[in-house]
Image 1 (cartoon, rainbow, N blue to C red):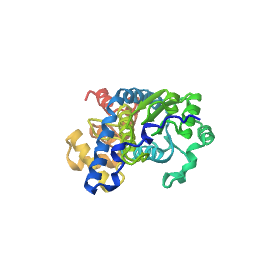
Image 2 (tube, helix red, strand yellow):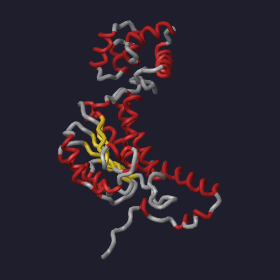
Image 3 (spheres, one colour):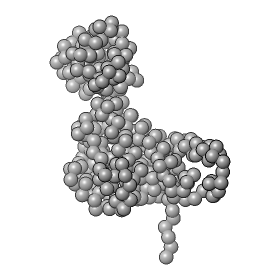
Image 4 (cartoon, rainbow, N blue to C red):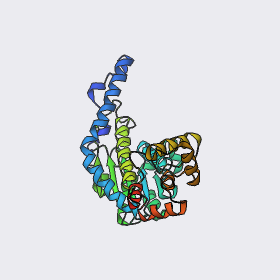
Length: 300
């Protein structure tokens, strides 16, 4: 019986056959070179990332959720990306869904057989009511993980926007998704250890994708994360620095405006422009949360 070809991420690079006999410094250098190659592998995917993020922003602006689907290392990298959006951009926690093979227990430990359970993925998509406004990101180094592919197929059948992210060409995931993002990283220094090159490339892709979506949704202004909520001392100082940069007002006024806005930087900017909190919130709502448009609407 003919065996299917191995995904590129599972192949053995003959350069590293005697890796264990090398000096530590040579091994470290080889792994570093692999990490640099992983970042470079994302370059050809930039147009696909841009197209996917534009489509995603449209769905999310209509009230949809960001849904991450994956197994093992790829799933955990997706979880990390999603978990960072609320503190960085004040993205609502209830608008993030994690579909992880093996469930929440797999966030911190390996449940290897779970990645083959396509039926579990289909059930999870149905359980969470994935629908037309939702954006589902499937991440798989091999591009053929049954759980991830099944999640993408089920979500697409329910009208969701689907995006596949893979490090190997020719797999089922990219074919199943509406938007295919391929960052082909090839063989790992340690064959099959996709937490290395493949994982780095996946993190880069997700960083670019999610940050671009948040910018498009108005959660970044003049290069600043103005939707961040100042909930501790460090973040309050960051918020004050942002307000100082954006308005040039005295520190006492910045502190007062931030307090009035309950730590919301965009509302504080508008308060410093002379609006009360209610009017500031209303103006931002009219302009879809975009501070630049809200300021332009006041002639600023």
